[in-house]
Image: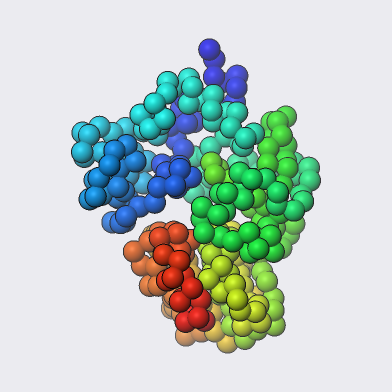
Length: 300
């Protein structure tokens, strides 16, 4: 069978981001050391993390099994299926868009090919479950997100849509990340004296989840939707007396945080809060419920 005719090649499946894929399955890293993400093995029972994903290489290795490889190698073991069955699942599962490349700069599908057809209230069980797995309450996601149906390469897909200031959407579901044109930052102006800044909207929603019992008036918000839009966001950010940075803990995010601190003492790097996690949402997902409630009262 020619799986390319179904829209997803073996090579494309191999290039899916392992960390994102494991997260979609409900597996989060127990620890992160540079580009190495360590997990309790999804393939067997263990108490000490010995399953490693090198995110730079996008390859995994299970030290207990003595096996490793690419995502397809993992999937056929995890799902106990053939390569063909795995590709069929990805191509047909809930009409989701095919998974995307691991490189952040390549994660945006050629956006001029995406045609937004309709947006409406979130209703898909699969999308709501995905948000729930990321510890984002329905009432929060419904305030800021839409369910979006769109056309790409003559096929119809759907995902969670987060609108930017120019009318484009950041699009997410358990298997992919994409953007529609025009791509831009998202600003939420509550007339506050300080601004909180996030790279992605799931981190912003995570922040709102922790503060869900508080009003919006304590802060304005900037969601960059790409770290590369930091300079574009500066005019809005620097209107404020204080700018709190909740950027990712990867090299790019930390470089922008250091750059911001060199610009003005208005900026404050808040990412130490989740220093052992890749971003705000990953940290939230690893918090127990009592901790989340307690933090909601403490954090500004």
